[in-house]
Amino acid sequence: MPAGTFGYGEAADRTAPGRAVENDDVTIFLARFASGAIGSIEAHRSAAGRAYDLSFTLTGTKGAIRFDQQRMTQLEVRLASDPASMKGFRSLQLGPGDGDYGHLWPIAGINLGIHDLKLFEAHDLLGAIAGASPAWPDFREGWRVEQVIDAVDEAAQSHEWVSVGAATAISRGPSPAA
Image (cartoon, rainbow, N blue to C red; front, side, top):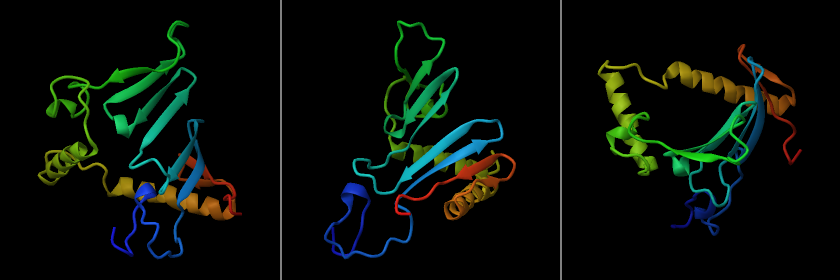
């Protein structure tokens, strides 16, 4: 890598000149939803070992589901009603009947890559421009995301819960450096 450039995680040029960090490398915050559900969101910009890792786990009283973008054609599911003989998560393979998957592959279990998703995004954008379908995400969705980000920033400064409209409250405790 040429001197003076930068990268993420393991790809970072350790010999490049250092500069002051002006944003968070890691953030963790709690969310409380109007429905009573709670959640935690964690993001790492420079976590080692993760080239482009986007994953989530939703856990409830009736079960849990996990998604990992590194294996984007697979969902892991565990239901509380599963018999005792079915311990742990089981994998479900996505296939032609799931979303846009069938536009690329006619059978289940063939992996899609992150760049394949760009085809679907471009298709949706062009369809919205042509008036065939509404754009999503749209500017209203972007504004809503910015409201959440602003609430996280405010909660980080005040160390208090901050409401985001009527739907969500955010809390971020003291940073490890505080």
